[in-house]
Length: 296
Image (cartoon, rainbow, N blue to C red; front, top):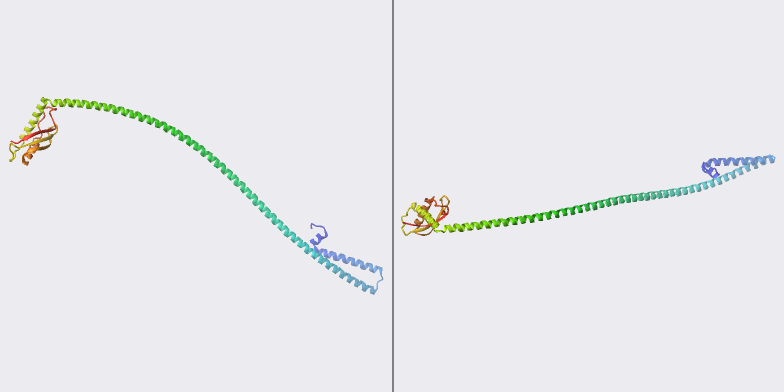
């Protein structure tokens, strides 16, 4: 029992309080009765009055007790109501406190989350800043590498251009030298051909060539088989192609005066005469020999 007052005693143990109250009232009544007996002679009439008085006093006491009980009941009810209100208020206050605490907790959690988020954002910003710095550094390195590569390519291009120019100059010089040599060769060949032509056109060469052609003509005539229709007025212009060994490669007759049998007999005679007689000299030899074959 924390409260030592009468109200605290009643709250703590109301039954014990009422019993003690009744005992005290009985003691008071007994004392009153004792005083009355000592002051007056004891008579039967007085005893009746005393008994009546005691009964009346008991009723009064009971009525007082009832009043006290009712008063106590009202107080108790009021106290319980107050306590209930106090309890409701306390619960509301506690609920408000809990709500306030929860609100503070949520706010603190929100602030903590916000701080965490800001820290994460700051960390991410630092990472992105570092990445950006690394990217810039890498880009700068790539740019420097690109410039160095461009410089190297420019040097290589210049060197290639110089080499190409040197090759072109060397090629041009070689071509010019070659052309000079070709011109010299052509000139020497032309001079030689002119000299050869002069030699071939000389009377001696003409005589030797004529003799060589006559020998081929006689050799072909020896291999000719005269057809029945042939006579001395028939002739054919014969063109023979031979190699250096005198082997006849081809024969062709042109501007023939005679029938077909005469023309074919001449061609067969040329083919049969292969190989042809040797030329008296290299200068006289000609791959193409031409003469007129006359029938006889």
